[in-house]
Amino acid sequence: MASLPTTMRAVQLLAYDGKPESVRVEEVPVPRPGPGEVLVRVISSPINPSDLAFLRGLYGFKKPLPAQPGFEGSGTVVEAGSGAMPRVLRGRPVACTTAAPNLASGMWSEYVVTSAQLCVPLRKSVTLEQGATMLVNPLTAWALMGEARRGRHRSVVQTAAASALGRMILRLGRRFSIPVINVVRRAEQVELLRGMGAEHVLNSSDARFVERLREACHRLHATLGFDAVAGEMTRIVLRAQPPGSRLLLYGALSLSAAETDPGSLIFEEKRLEGFYLSNWLRRKSFLGQLQLTRQVQQLLSAELKTEIQARLPLEEIRRALKMASTYSTAGKVLLTP
Image 1 (tube, helix red, strand yellow):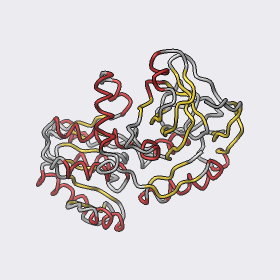
Image 2 (cartoon, rainbow, N blue to C red):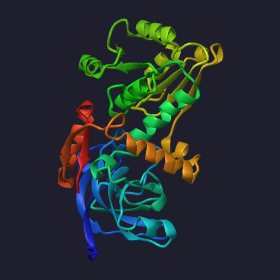
Image 3 (tube, one colour):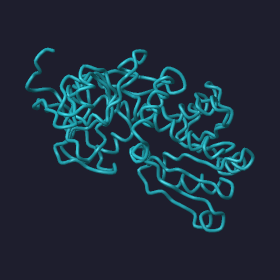
Image 4 (cartoon, rainbow, N blue to C red):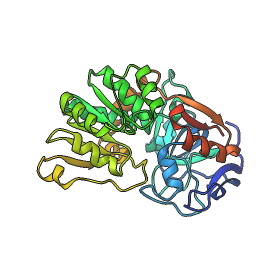
């Protein structure tokens, strides 16, 4: 294997303020893996809502500044620290994540150090580009719909339904014969989902949205919901669901605190719960995680497919962030070091 360079290009975050000038590309030392870690030559990394929240200091944790952003991506393991698992991964293509407060590296760089336990070897049928977007949205969609299947829910309701993850849930609902009530906020998003075959699509901008949402949730018995928006949308959806329902909050696209109606929780025995993929995965055994990632990889070109709108080099990080923030429905923006 060729010798590694001593420096690399990496995106650096200088302040948690969301300003474009606080993000820039710099030449920094190539990190080296410690025990249980691997060094990955990064091929591709998406910009996800969780990344945008991190840049503004609104994610679940912060890293010391200057920080390297980017939570997921793909590449090839080029160096291994001590331990059996790092050695097994050496030379292999992997999907990986750095979404942990103790990891200094970020995926928006030419090389990244991460734990071998946070890497998933890719099957030969999975491209590195497909693998780059495998860990956040596909696994979350699979986990959420797994809750619906285990709980034998007759239907589900979801917000941000036109997002990449929302479209995955829509396709999984069709695969498992679970009707999905899809909430979007623009007319063109209604048309997008209708074009995908969605039967139940509601525009939150419509005058009768709240009334129609309640009618659909009760008619289809949507006792499980997935909310990525928070703010007042949480209260609206939970109130619309039948008594005894659950609403899983997995995002906060509104950048507002989730609102709840005490009457829904007290008198109708509804439950509002947080969902964090890392915690969900941590509760699974190693063999369970292996089986899960095999199942997900088999669906990356179908139900768990990610649409891509642009592939940009690190030097265009500010343009990439603008595109990801403004045109998210068009597909993911990939950074390609």
